[in-house]
Length: 169
Image (cartoon, rainbow, N blue to C red; front, top):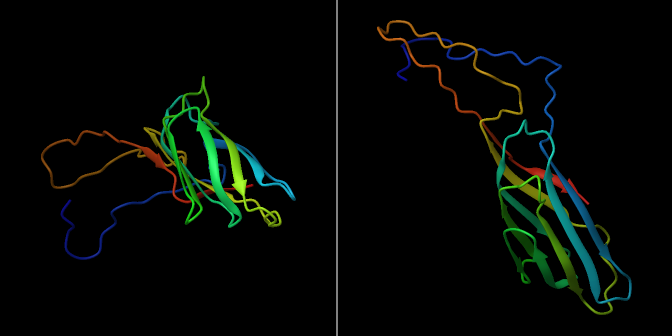
């Protein structure tokens, strides 16, 4: 695209008030810390909500664990996970979500002995992509080109990509 000299309109769009964005994934979580116990329970399940039959891929779940968590012994049903005991960052690379067998991460947390349970549960951050779907509802209806002798092919590749999607537990 070579812009013309001077002012010009490249794009015009309208979003109706009825076009509410529905979040296409859900996260079920169960995170529990017990007073006067050196163990805690951790469980997360991720699943699709409204994807119009499209695959959710590139799913990465991260969570900043409280200072009192020393280590985590977790088992993923899918993908790989890491826990950094220094930064207390849990990262789970899920990959694609299969709706027939939802990915989950379960296990225990080793906590500091004698420390009181954390004031609040950690937040869960989620990244994902959905090819050929625009959950915003924005669509390209037409493309007008002037001064060209050929007719352009209208081929649009939509992609939904999560920015900062956060689940508070």
